[in-house]
Image 1 (cartoon, rainbow, N blue to C red):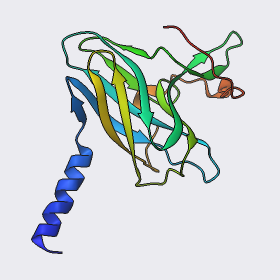
Image 2 (cartoon, one colour; image 1 turned 135 degrees about the horizontal axis):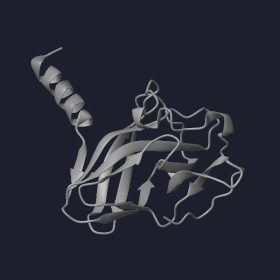
Image 3 (cartoon, helix red, strand yellow; image 1 turned 90 degrees about the vertical axis):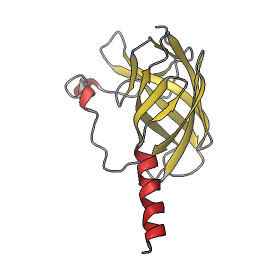
Image 4 (tube, helix red, strand yellow; image 1 turned 60 degrees about the vertical axis):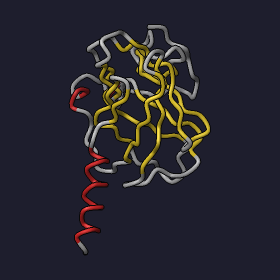
Length: 172
């Protein structure tokens, strides 16, 4: 491998490892899970930090990898069952705060995948904020990503159920 090729490869690897940062919004450690061959949906996870000095609000997300891209979370119902729900109004992002987008919690949901998400792929996502505007994020698909440290011990695995395909609106 030539020096030029080595430098190009190193630059590409470093740029993929850097967090997305735009208008004071920083996206750290984004990743998506590999989807099964017949899967029609997928999800992306990340930490979104607010360094703008003012409160903001994540109002939506888009991606060309799926027919629809939505913000979702999990909420316990009256029977103690965790259900995944669509959060149409989005998530608050307080100044100097963060949104933890993790498995079993808030996340970006891809519905109607256009292709299988394979290990090593990159998924382009645009996060839309009320004040900061659009923040572009390239999300690597990672087969070997371990469950998020922040979620360990917080989920009732025995009661986990994804629901019956119904999307519900949740208020903060």
